Image 1: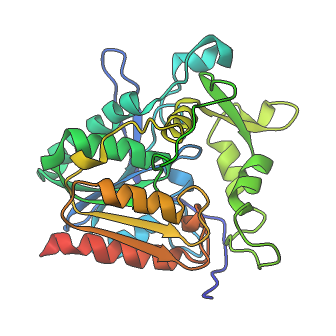
Image 2: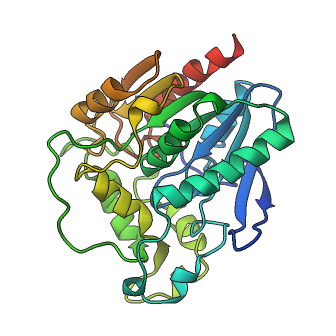
Length: 318
């Protein structure tokens, strides 16, 4: 295993803001400019771009790796995450509003970002890398605008469960709180018992305070500090596992890579098989990385993730 020494990090990319109009949220954008094809990263359900694609271990982030391969690399934060606007729903009790940030609304934010990237770069077709819940949003956009997406990478995608069961339990509220202990428990739950830690920072020594700092109110929350995030992503995942994926994979026509860790409990072999078999793309691949989980971009296996993604996207050059 190729181990990487963790170090406290600046995050990758130059930060700007896409200002909202007529009630639209202002969104944080980050970019490492390059002369090659443009690639936009779409983050997952619980942490923003600074803590995912832009987070540096040993001086290297996923954005840095893509830029070193020649790509023009972009990322952003959905409303309610990181440096983007907080929605009005955050000002009230979670039970007082429906889940904020469902895929249909998040797709509108993604579309705004992609329109901005096209305007800045002059490139009509862009590639997307999406993680976890972000694959639902990216898949929805790709199904609605199939001619505008060059290539699509689904990292740990959420699929519709084949033997779907009706959704049960409490309905997600407008928002929810996530503590460091909850994140860490989720990050390690799929690692086999007795196996050495696969996280580059096993105790999240630098990542954890950076995560709390992504929400100005996190440190003051009791009984433990916690980050407030939109409830929509959890609702979308719950719906997908109850038979209601928010997009039709058959309408996704861009060449698509499914890449996942061998220990990913949220994207199992059956999930990947279901999704790949229903994509409308003529070119699809499914790559499984050894000793990786759903959080592989924070793990020692991330170099395999980087290589699989870079090699697939590199085909846009030819």
